[in-house]
Amino acid sequence: MPQIFPGEVFANTTDFDTGIRQILPRYDEMLEVIIRCLPKKTHRILELGCGTGELSLKILNRYPNAEIIALDYSPRMIQFSQAKITTAGYEKRWTGIEADFGEWANYPEKLGIGTDFDACVSSLAIHHLTDEMKLKLYQQIAANLNPDGCFWNADPTLPESPILKEIDEIAREEWRNKQGINITETRAKVGQSETQGYSNQDQLATLNIQLEMLTTAGFSTVAVPWKYYGLAVFGGWLR
Image (cartoon, rainbow, N blue to C red; front, top):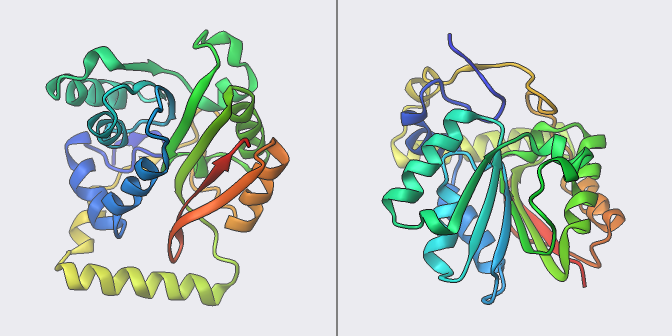
């Protein structure tokens, strides 16, 4: 089985866009929530873990003045995203940088991407960091946002109890059955991941703990605009 970075999920990038929609219920709806939470005048956006560029593409489609700096430590993801963004005609508004956002959390000056971002977004990436690194990352995000900036993250969260974990698993199975998804076939395309940089295999934290982290990091308002069992979109505003 091919070795992949945590977060890449599938051995072949060609399987990602279809496969992630079969593994995760309401994937597109989840990303749409992030987009709706961005202010209309959002201009400069930092994306942490761009994957195949789906969130970037949705943002650029919605906001004609938006410009995105996207970090991802996977060279194949940066290449895949760049090709997708270029095909859509948005290459002048998107910059992909091969970098570990955990490294950025510790040493932001190394990348030289500047500060003063209107917004920071992430999807299905931060849950690969340890809790200590999550807090450092949230603090760094807050330090690099404009005073009225916002941050939104779409990620799986740790169930508060075994019962809730079971409820989540049943809900996902029922959703897949309704969609006619053969999850066995989809899982056969998943690769084997190893620790890479600051990212490990799943390091889930409960939603409440992460909301507390955001408050500690300096976000005056924290919110959960969307939740579907163990999946959530959460974040907030500096003021």
